[in-house]
Image (tube, rainbow, N blue to C red):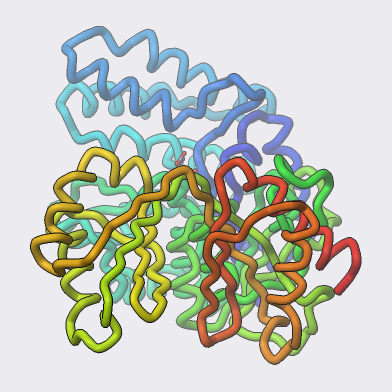
Length: 439
Ligand code: ASP
């Protein structure tokens, strides 16, 4: 049974971390296909190798000497090689990298070298085959991921590999230039490799034991989530819960492969399983809570709005014209409210307002800023009586005024709007009512 194991930057930041990873891989003979990130931070104010590579490229663009920063990067790798006791020199690789960066091989080329070099070390350490991602992960001329070509070539290539290390984060365009995914993109590579192998499981090793019911910066020692569906995860990630790159879900989802988020520093913790569907009842009605601050509500009023065909479209056109995407749009009989990101909206505020007047001719437009949106997500809410009632009563007891509520008909997600100042207290109140009281 094949498993793909992806290890994040903090899991590979030092020789000590590499050894933990080696032990994890050796503990299960199904872990034969490994996707490493670049070395991340060893301590909180350390710099990730990927960031050093970006700054190296910028230094080259300014026609300044890149040797100091390249030396710093090489030293990070040498420290790992020494700590693992490997007979490996990256001198030749660094000469090539220096030449290519000076030759302006592209910022993505520079950034990708973090994973590339870590992959070489990992393959050497494990005695696994090294497969350069540039030969098996493809992007098109526009720089978009080419799923079909990748699936075909990668699965063919992996058929001939008993084991392999495939660096994360990058691939190549048709002309051979290197292209990367967005930051954190090694998660996507892991997912692509799992799909190509028809793996049984995609393990994503990081420095936390999976997803937590709520942000630990707000809730002290929150419970962890043992099982979450792809859809629940999508709702929570959209609202700011970050552990896994959002796009990492799509390749495995096509094959129904579960993802297991695991902690390299606590390998025995079960972590979180991300699945297509499950009959496991969640321990609470809700699976997770996430939220974001910094929204503006634009309240638009017009008598008889409900019977005016096209009113909503005209209002939204005003936002579209100004390049602003909207988050939510709850409506009443003669009112319609559009929620947008405050920072995006502020600079275009007057242009949007006058466009709404011109296009939709409302009676009044009223703005309210400094709002927060909180998503309460859970497959257990479906068909459960009283979920909204409980949320409201918890918030009322905490003296928090609810400005908006929006529940999709899938009953998977309830969005609540509160003042920014009430954000943390609201999350605490919702967490308490569902998790501490165990409803
Ligand atoms: N090393 C890249 C980054 O820092 C990609 C990754 O770690 O997934 O964003």
